[in-house]
Image (cartoon, rainbow, N blue to C red):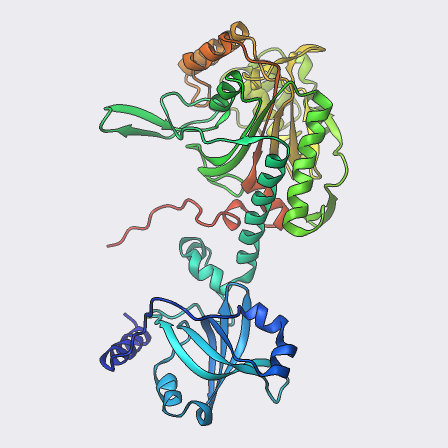
Length: 490
């Protein structure tokens, strides 16, 4: 324990010894700091008493005057304490207050000699005592590990962190309103699943003691939502957490937030336009504009995005024509011929090889928002074949700055025989050692065998999208509590 922490604890002990409650149950706040500043001229003219509450983030004493900077959830403003106004209470406050304490101040609007809008205190009450000091005021909290591990301190020290999280909340709320108004029904699907499905990814496992059964944390909500479509719920969606037991880097976190929605009887072009409208509406609701600055480039979500095929993206980036490659060896040889440093270790099957090639070339070369169409059918076991080219799937992904943000199947696979065949192919890959190949799900197949109408579906990675829209360098900046390696406490 530092000397400062010892002093803070002694001050709290002194307060309690005097019979003063430093942790009252309620508050009498009448204004937030932004409300008080917004109505400051009227408050100054009327001298009507106001009460604000917040955390002291700065404090200085000059003779019989003290100047406090008080921060709440809307901003900060100055509070002035005068001994002439507060009497003995002034001495008590000066002796016992520390930066970091939470106080409530009642007073009137006041302008200092330097012209700063302030509240001149008529009374002040301590609401909570901070026994540990805040990060150093001027430099803020800079240590990356501490910032993510102690997000509460990060929020106090770095306003831009709060702004990103607020923007995220507004974006999701706006997205949800738009879908509700468009006739979609929000549902909740299981997180604990006996079979992980809906994506190609490595799952987390857990054990249920009462059932004596192993379960997986869901990697996607897709299969459960499709079963609801089979049951007659023609427009459904879920905004929820998914979990994938994979690497952690600037664009991946083991738990993340996804929007998945499904619509029966949708038309291809209408569905693509609808998904662009989801992003447009959500961005406007969160920021008031459809224009965002992404990596220094102004991007207008108010217009349709350009389109390119999976094959074209790779050809443009490295000159390889994937339509001429039939085997894993062909793909590896083509990459070596182009002197591409691609590690195919762990890839099993043509689909995984093509995916590795695409991520390092075609996808990495895309900066501005672009729809990528016609992924090889091996990569999309849950999408229908493209009617014009059966080797390609009826899907598209929106790519921004080399990362997939929106994954759309404008024709979902609803043929149960074809679906079983693809699941069996995935099972074969798993038996060869693939950790990301999908499992054969008999319950889902049974649902399809009862008939699923023509359906379109989409998944949107909320974390990645917000990171791009706010200029965050990695996902940890837009997730309130990102996954970190546990600390070891000796």
